[in-house]
Length: 135
Image (cartoon, rainbow, N blue to C red; front, side, top):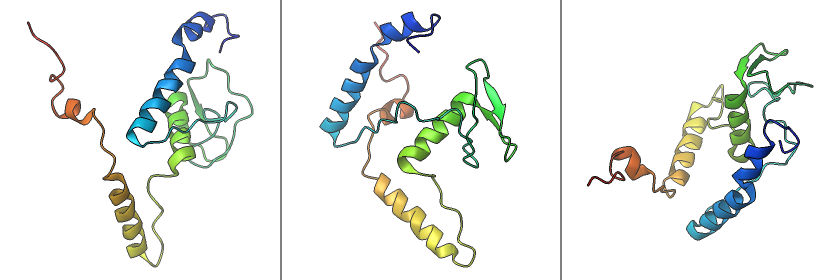
C-alpha cells in the first residue's frame, strides 16, 4: 500500500506499527492473544466458501464471483471471513450425518470456552450513550 501513490500518504499517517504495539500490549495485559496474518496471505482472493484462490484481483474489483462454486463475494467481507477462519477456524462445525449429538457437544464446548472472554465494549452495546458526557 505504501507504493500506491493514492494510498501512500494515508498509510504512512496511520502508524500501523503503533496500532499493532497497542493491540499486543493490551492483549498481554488482559491475557489475550494477537494473531498476525502473513503479509502475503491472500485473504481477499480466497473464496471463503470453497477455498479456491483467484490468480489476479485488482483493487478496483469490490465484488467478485468464484469460478469454482459461483459464490458472489464482497471483497472486504470475504477477507474478514478468511482472516477469521485463519485464526479460529469455521465458527460452526458441519453436522455429523449419523451423530448430531457430537455437533451439539462441540457447540457447547465452544460456547463454554468463550464465556471467560469479557469485553469492555459490552457496556457500550447495552447502553450506547453511557460514554457521552452532557454539560
